[in-house]
Each structure stands twice: as structure tokens, then as C-alpha cells.
Image 1 (cartoon, rainbow, N blue to C red):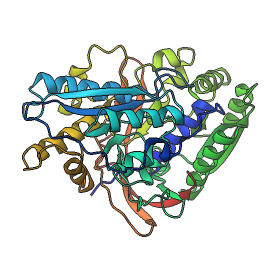
Image 2 (spheres, rainbow, N blue to C red; image 1 turned 45 degrees about the vertical axis):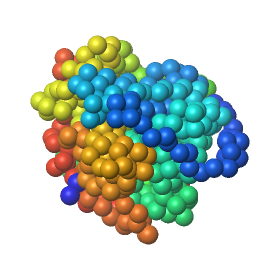
Image 3 (spheres, rainbow, N blue to C red; image 1 turned 30 degrees about the horizontal axis):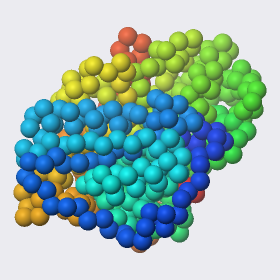
Length: 434
């Protein structure tokens, strides 16, 4: 059976770290600041009362207002359409939003407000730069559904259900003894399907960037690649020199541990020196419709962009679930893969709430959490690579993992490369520190 990608958590965390590049994220408040109770009772509701959910997003974060809003936009679009169609068993879903400002203090404040004051049944599509309130959410036994794993929270705490699933024990310690594990399927894909043998990894001389670059290098070497490392100065990056060297060394692929602006500059430099590659590989956070603007001065490199992820290409309108998403979001100026995943997170909550509405208890935190905890091979109507939650005592040494792949083509946008449920590989699982 296809399975989701643990390494995706590392990529999401790295993307956030690279965007931040040293900016302080705020301090954490102790849980005692919110009182000693671990469970907040939710009062009984009438059958027509709204079902309240919360969405925490780092909107006004140090990395910019549009960076983390994709999942929220997708989730709200789903709930708007759901309510227009009668809600859940006749009850509308009421969305309470909270901007945590990208800080630990702000995140704890949002968690306190949504759980203790607004009495939400669940959190949905959380996208927090510093999820400092994760332990509070877990101790309150509030299900957090389909959040983006920007950090290790979704592989640390029970009652938190990240969009890509988890095999970790989730007993309060990240992963297994503080180590997370991810596969090499992306590198295997380009080796098997595109014949790539030499890969360049470009990073800054900055801690977060260098750490993620080492993780990529580890995976590439495990798959037998010749690895070319290019490190540029963060303050005064010489991308032209890096591009010239990777060209000279015959790189087939280019991976990076740099921010979006740096990627655009790298692509421009690659075009300038004539560095043609099979693929300039990016991640799910940069899988957006803004490519023509982001890479406007690098047409050759732009048309060598590939993206990999664990959800169906937002431009694959041959798929009915994608068509429904696009129809519901046609008023948005831009589209992104994170919007699809926010839409899928809201669908996941809805499926849980509908199942609970048919029980004697109704839609409660405990019932929704029970549904999520039993989730096995969930696909959000085919939008996700099948997602499961297990609690393995030992990390797996190898797994069959599947991935969604698309490449950019001017005039066509992101073009899917095969079906994500059959683009699968049995790959080793390598440890990394969150």
C-alpha cells in the first residue's frame, strides 16, 4: 500500500528555517501560565449550533505575510463550500482564526484562546513557524488535524495529526530518541526515471541552511550519486561562481538549501553561465502558480523546475477532486500546493465530524480524536498519498514510499509526471535531527 513521506517534515521545517535565516522566533511560555487543567470541557450543544474549529497561522511572521497562509486559504475554501451545501448534519462549521505572529509567545496565546475561550472542537490546517503551544494542545486532548510539520511537534505529541502522517511513538519526545527518519525516494526517482548521476547541493554559510544541505547530501550519497557541494556567503552570495562550478562538474540535478529569493538568483546565474540541468528540484512550499514572476529572468532554469510532494498537483484538473478544489478557489489570485493540503485537512476534519454526528455522543473532541487516531491510508478523496498514523517502537529501516512529481513548463504550468500512487520505491530510512 502506498505510504506518505516522513522526510516531508524535514523539508517543511527546513523551508521555514531557510526563510527565517536567523530571525528570532520569540520565547515559549510555560504551560503553567494557562492553568493546571489538562482537559477543557466542551459544553453540550444543540443540534443546530455551529461546530467551531480553529486555524492557527503565522500570518504576520518575520518571514512575510504570504509565506504560511496557503493551508488556511485552502481550509477556509473547503468550509465555505461545505456550509453552502448545508454543513455537517445541518450544522454549519464556524472557523475561528488566530495569527500567532510567528512567535512562541503568540502561538501559546492562540492555543489558549482557541481551546479555552472559543472551545473549538479541533484545530485544522495549523501552519505555525514556532508551534510552542503543541504540548498544551496535546494535554487538552484537542485533535489538531492536517497541520504542516514545520518542526517536530507532529512526531512528538499525541492528538496531533500532521498532513503527512507519522510512524513515531509520539510520547513527548521527537521521533525515536530524538531522531526522525526519512526516505530517499526523491533521489531514487531522478536516478531511475531521468538517469541522473551527479547532483549539486547549494547552501548558505548559515547554520540552518548548512544543516539541511547535509541532510540532502546524506540521502543523495545513499542513492549512489556523485555530490557536488556549493556554499555561498549569506550576506554577499556569489551565485555565478556556484553556477559555473556546478556546470563544470557536470551536475544533472540541483537541490538547494536556500530561500526563494536566493533560488531566483541562482537560476539567473545558471542561465547566464549556460548551466543546463535535467532538473532544478524544489519543494512543496515553492510549488505555486507564482513561478513566472519568481523566475521571470531565468527562462531556461524556470523550465527545468521540478517539484516533489505528497499531494496531487493543484493543476491536475483531469482529477475530479482537484477540479472541485479549483472551482472553489477560482477567485484566488494565486494557487499553491499548500492550499490543496489545507483543503484536504478540512476535508479530513469533515469526514471525522460526519462520522461522529451519527453516534450517540455527537461531534465532540474525543470522538473526532478517536476517528483521527484510527486513520489508516486516508487520501482526502485522492488528493493525498495515503496517510496513516502508527506508533512503532522502533524506526523502520526501509519503507515503500510514494511521491507526487510535477515539472514546470511555460504555457502549461505545473505538469504532473505520472500518478503519485504508482510512483513508489522501497527506500532506506535515514536518521536526522529535528
